[in-house]
Length: 410
Image 1: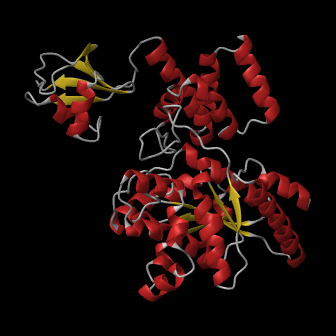
Image 2: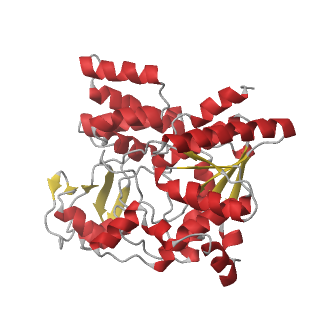
């Protein structure tokens, strides 16, 4: 078992608070709490929350999940909290506009596979799964008044995203202010020692969570705030489901591989660091190889894609995904396992695309056609009102990775 100092070094690695004093305080408190837990023969209670605003967890979420895994490996008690009630509001921390409201039924449906996805990283035998509607849905208006009395409106409006919206005349809805209170109460309900989160959670964890715990006579939680965020497939903005630049953990191996390969070269190093866990020495070697030309960016990215698929789908799936990518995208061949669909009559192309799940809707199908992302037998389709009048079979390609063989009914 690592010493207390070794545990602190491991657990604080990769953290950043934007203020050296806060980091120093959190490091000191973590060391003290670890020493206390060791004397008492108990593990620390640690958690991180994930809001099921969509059905997918993505690679960006694995940064905090890997920190939770470190706590598990050191023998501490980890809770993977699914924000079934906080999702009704949606975290405004990194948003310039209000999020759309959701129903509890929608949220619960999205949350259905979150535990399965979490176990891609976390140890299922050492992980508690909790849902915050268990306690948040039972709070009364009197409870809300009591919690709100510990905070000022100025504290909330001083946050950068709210300040920008206020300055630009964008609306700030009252229910958005509740989110930090809800997250703070999660820490109270779980009686947590440590909460893990990203940079956008600094206020919710350090200010709201700690203050509410102190107001309830509890020792304030220690914030473990991860310093870097994973950029999305655009290589620029933080990976986000709402921005559509994410790589879902449940993506099919071929799709996951292809999405990683679409990440700009400049973003590759941070993927190696945050997803593959490269050490500073390994990062220096990687960057030197790319700089001196001994490692081609394409080969580095293929290795990255292969390793990421292997982590989430296994060795064989990674090998097949790479073979598929090489065959389809490098050699420009069609995949050998294209599904076949029989066409009856002369349906509209957008109807067929939506029906077969090649797009999520007919509107998306039209956008794909307008953007030049649809080909029939290798030829771009330009007409959004095109109908399929087939005399012989044809291969329909939507985007870079979706194929179907269309066969006319005889």
